[in-house]
Image (cartoon, rainbow, N blue to C red; front, side, top):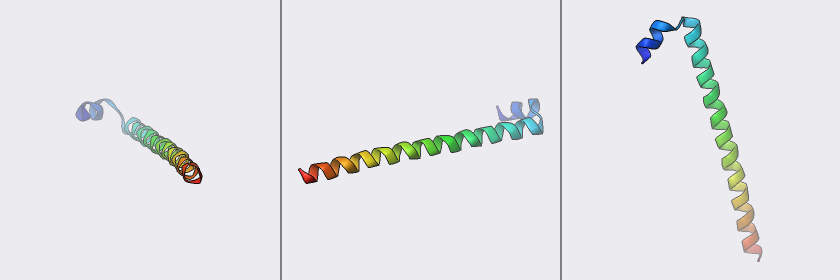
Amino acid sequence: MVSRIRRTLTVQQRAAAFEHTSKVAVETAEEERRLRDEKNDRLRKLRLASTKS
């Protein structure tokens, strides 16, 4: 697969594809971090509410 990509894409196209892939990876990591933080906040609030009761 990689060899076929190297034969068919120009250096600029490969660089653009790499940048796009990196951008998607960063966005995905940020989204996962945000969701994890939201989940932790909800769990923290539930724990606090259960200890107050």
